[in-house]
Image 1: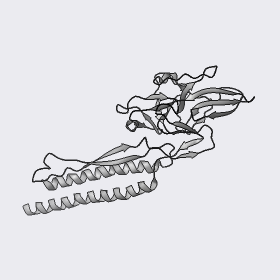
Image 2: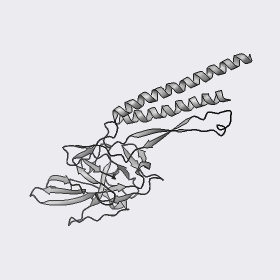
Image 3: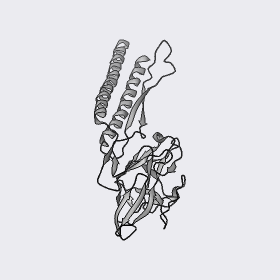
Image 4: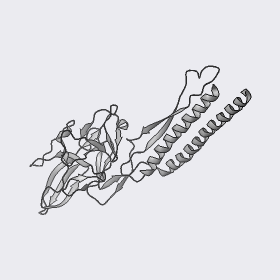
Length: 277
């Protein structure tokens, strides 16, 4: 019966707009999260097999969340030499362990608010350690585009006479010693993906590979499809509060309209039952 299908369509409207509200709420909550990428709620129709007959049967609506991971946020200057932002495509490679093993999970993030821990390893606010290729005793760096086991956590306090540490736009980590000489410590790695918008989001404003994201490629900043680094810079959240607040109003009205469908269909069913009685 069309009345029943109308009621069910209203229920799908409630469900879809509830999901949209959750997406918008998450965006607003992370409006100040460094490197956060907003999500977008998209809607698609549900069509039943009987919808093309004379007796129309409502299908309803389905919400699909779209990740906008490749959207570039605004870079803002900071006073910390170890704050980093990727200017273009790519992600910092991070791990939850300062001395990762081959079996430890590697994650990827745009949140570059790195500071040294008590042992000198750079980690961000989520406790994830920045990975890069270490320099040998002569300062030479050997990169590998596919093997994450060749990466190690960046340490900026490995020497006892360091006066200052700097990271340039190519990701080269350099220590200035007390006597004015410099020593190369390593190079930050940047990972790129064939379809970064399909990465799997995890806690800590990070991502993991998925079946549709494709395999990562490790690049030196500014090579391949990887962007250069912006030292003493952080990438702001891509959330625009005015857009999200407008979305809240639209979603609220759509939710109310869907609930009205249900109450109207229920009233019509009650009228029909009263006739039968």
